[in-house]
Every structure is written in structure tokens, then in C-alpha cells.
Amino acid sequence: MSTGSDAFPAAVYADTVLSVNFRDAQKYFLKALREIHYAHTLMLARQGIIPEATARCCIQGLDKLNLDEISTAPYDGRSEDLFFFVEGELERLCGRTIAGSMHTARSRNDIDITQYRMCLRAEILAIVTHLSSAREVLICMARRHSETLMPAYTHTQPAQPITLGHYLLAVVELMERDERRLRAAYATVNRSPLGACAISTTGFPIDREYTANLLGFEGLQLNSYGAIAATDYLTETVGAISTAMLNLGRVAQDFLLWCTAEFGFLRLTDAWVQISSIMPQKRNPVPFEHVRILASKAFAQAQGVFTCLHNTPFGDINDAEDDLQPLVFASTADAIRAIRLFAGVMDGCEVMTARMAERAAADFLTVTELADTLVRREGVSFREAHHLVSASVKELNGRYSALAFVESVEALAPAHLGRALRVSREDLLEALDPRHFVNIRRIPGGPAPEALRTALEQAEAHLVESRAWVQAKSAAQAAYPEAIRSACRSLL
Image 1 (spheres, rainbow, N blue to C red):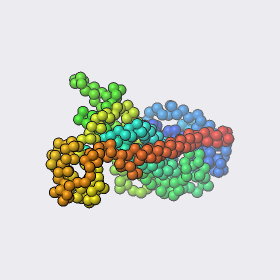
Image 2 (image 1 turned 90 degrees about the horizontal axis):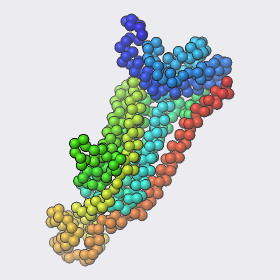
Image 3 (image 1 turned 180 degrees about the vertical axis):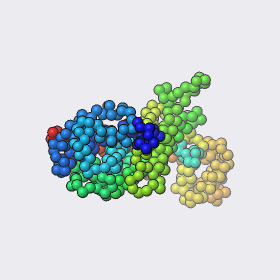
């Protein structure tokens, strides 16, 4: 590397920017770059822009590239970036004139955005795949615990009885929506900008549709200016990741709380707990802590993408390119780690059903149903019933038992309603039973067994549809390299 003050690259520039970007490109984009070279060369020959003999030499040169060696080559400053490094290797293999013809009607600008999109679509597909696996774990768990009573919480305080299956299906629905957002982002990402060239296309008669098909894209990012300038393919993706990770972190926080001795709702198996170096009794449920921090990291990195792009010009700009892309892939990597870990730990935990049921029957959690019973059986307004029940809650002052509560309601009824209750004590006691509370809430979306069965069937159908989507997209991504190879064989 030259140390002359006027020679490119300046030493500090090379150390702080170019060498770092070179290593990142080696890690993330080398394979995609070669596939783009293949597709573009095939198109140039097909369109008669370069002679077939020239294209054959280029294809043969691409075949001879040693990706393992290129991926570990040190940055020495002789090439500005990986693109020029690979171009230098092709010149060595094919000669400068032949290799140079490959760059007809394209730019590093459209090459870069194309390889970014090719790599990002694979990351989205991986996240959706792991979200589907996590949903499957939760659906199976929800089916096993469709009648496991537990307290629901509002404002961090016990509120009403539900079932664990009902709670878990809420998480499943959350992940379904996360997947839909990611699938929408995939549709945005998987459009080819190749052919936009620097920013205004080219005067050569290229076939953008052909290269898009060869590279596994589902269409064109049509406007050439927007193909280079727009960054919403990134922000839509990291926005979906941000939402998914925020959702996952909130759920992990719940489960971490449920593992505390004070709650005692979940117990991790020995495979998942870590011990203390000093306290022999400790069984620390740290996997949930790791889920939480990994989700937070992925969220923060995704938000960092927004910060980096905020108030940048709408055009070709480095802020959206080499220095930014690794932040995107760091976010996707941590998102995948978080989701995989979450699914694994949920598959390896024990539900303390007796403790959950005990808490569901405590703390006045069913008194809303007693008020509803008064409305149905006594013909009073809900507000009148609420005042009466509330007065009994205050009278017992935290000392809850079903019988004591019913006796209090019966005693206070004349003062609040102007008469004694007609409904039997047995019916009032039934209203305070947490199982009855759950079973009577059978409308769509409720925790009753029949409502939950319908919700489980819908969740399983959505999972089947999601897996079919993943399978179709994965097959398409697995097939396009062979389409390139086939076209190369035909040319050769």
C-alpha cells in the first residue's frame, strides 16, 4: 500500500473504511456478486451486446474464480473494494479486454443494490422460518394447556381467570402478524434493480426482466432513479424486525417473571438453567434473559438503520451502502438467535398447573362474573351490580374466600338494591368458580374450551399456509442458481 500523501488510498482511509468494507463484502456479498456477473454476462450475449465468444470466456473465467481464496484475501489497497478485486481476478483469468466487456451497461450502483437485496431476502426467509417453528411450539403447548387455569394480568395486577392456552394463542397471533409484516417486506425486497446502472439506465438494449428471472427476483424495481435511491426495502424490513423483536421481548419478560419463586408458574428443566458460582440453591432461568437481550439488540440495530438513513439525500449515497449493510445483517442475525432460543426454551419448560390454578381462584379474580350474574338474574343494571360487588370487595379488605364474599354481597344487597337477592347462594358461588368464569366466555376470542378449539384450528391452518409460503420461496431461491448454471451450459 502506498504511503504517498497523494496516492490512493490514504492509509487512514484504507484502515478505517476500505479495509473494513472489503471484509464485510467478503463475508456477505461474494457469492451474490458472482451470480450477478453470470446473469449480466448471459444477458449481454443473449441481447447481442457482446459476442458469444466473449461471453463464453467471461463465463469460463467466473467458473475459475476461487471463492474460498477471495473470501480470505487480505485488503492490500490495490483495489478499492471487492468488486474491483474480483474484476482484477477476472482480468488475470480472461484478459483485460474480455473481462472489461462484462461491465457493459451496468454500474457498481445497481450491482451493489442487487446483491444487498439478494442477501436480505434470504435473511427474511430465515426469520419467517424460525418464527413458524416458534409458533408450532406454542400451538402444541396451547393445545396441551387449553384448560389450564391461570390469572390474566392488567396493569401488572391479577385481573381475571383465563387459560394458559388462551394466553399462548395471543402470542401465536402476535407472531402471525409479525410474519405477515416480514412477508410483505420480502415482496418489496425481492425486486431487481439491476439495469438501473448508475441511476438513469443505459442506451444499450438490455433485458432487465431476463436478469431478474435468472437471479430469482419476482419482478423489477422499475424506476431507475428509485432503484438506486430508495431505501424503503431496508426500512420496511427492519421495521418489521423491530416490531417482531419488541413483541418477543415483552413476552420473554412475562415468562421470566413467571419463573420467579413468587410466581412459580414455569420451571425450566436442568438443560436450560444456570447455577450460581456461590449460591448452591440457585436455578437461574437465564435463557429468557438472553432472549430478551438478543431481541433488544436486534431491535436497537434495526432502529440504528433508521437513524443512519434519517435526513440523507434521496439519491445514490454511501450512507445506505457499505457501512450500513452490516448493521442490517447484525439485526437479522440476532433476531434469528432470539427466536430460536425462545422456541427451544419454551419447548423445555414445565408448567406448574396447580400453582396457576390456585392463583386463578384467589384475589377476587372472578367477581366480574358475579356482577354479570346479578345483571342476568336480578334484572339490575351493570353499574348497580358493580357498586354492590365493589362494596363487598372493600368490606373484605383483601381477605378473599368465595363463601365470605357471597355472604357479604347478600348482606349488602338491601342497602344497594333496596331488597334482598333472589338468586340462590349456590348460583352465586358458581359465579365465583374460575372454571365457570372461563367456560362461560365462549364467544370468538374467548378462553372457553370451544372458543379455544376454533382458535387453535385457525392457528394451525395459518401455520400450514405460512410453511407453504416458506417452502415455495425457499424452492425458488434454491432453483435460480441452477437456472444460471443451465444458461451457462447452453452458452458454453
